[in-house]
Image (cartoon, rainbow, N blue to C red; front, side, top):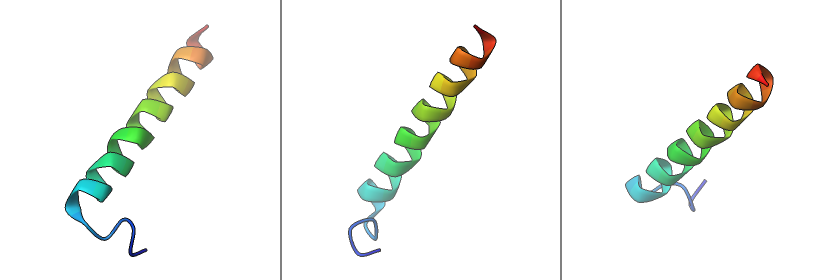
Length: 30
């Protein structure tokens, strides 16, 4: 948890998760 304790770390994980979800949504549509 220490790696993602900083704000930039959390932001990166959040953006990464959103990108993965968007990619899954696009694949699901097609």
